[in-house]
Amino acid sequence: MPLPWRRRPIRTMRLARSLLAKGKHVLVEKPITDNTAHATELAELATRSGLILQVGHVERFNPVLGALETHLTHPRFIEAHRLSPYSERSTDIGVVLDLMIHDLEVILHFVRSPLWSIDAVGVPVLSRSEDIANARLHFEDGCVANVTSSRISPERLRKIRIFQEDAYLSLDYQNQSGEIYRRVGGRITRDRVDIEREEPLKLQLASFIECASTGREPRVSGSQATAALKLAVEITKRIAPSG
Image (cartoon, rainbow, N blue to C red; front, side):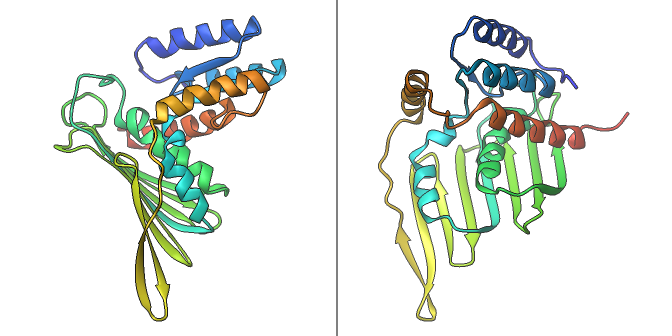
């Protein structure tokens, strides 16, 4: 089901499809395209052709994610906040497809379990689409993720918190910093997470070149980006007023 997006994703999809058809590896910005059918088409075309289709979910290249994966065991509760001041950029789509989709892709990467239920709310404030949104995702393995995004915040914030049986991790994408809390000897300890700072966009581009040169699977493939898009579209549908 196409959404009322700007025309850029449609042109991007056509260009990506044309390049793949000519045997070229492709790095495309997120979201992968304007609807889930087109996204599936691109992912399947890349797979059939043996080509690299990498999607620019740049947060997956943030060193914070590498640090998180080092300590991650079995997430039980995830809380993600992504807030930005208002701008005229991308206001023809809602905040779910503009900002929240970053966190949705990360959560699907960490929680390898089917979704059981979705609750979502959102309201437009300065745009025609939702400017503030919250989604609560319940997975079949019992994990719950609470995701909040806003593009009318007075401050910029990008944080993720993960609770598991043995620890609580709090990480800041923006400042590339984090802390881990553990229970040791009947008390809670707090330690800084060691993160080697680097520019995520630089890492993303370097990774694409490596994948195109070696054939290695990209960190965010067409199929992974399609799964994130499908979830974002479903959340957007639940927020949109009926009728």
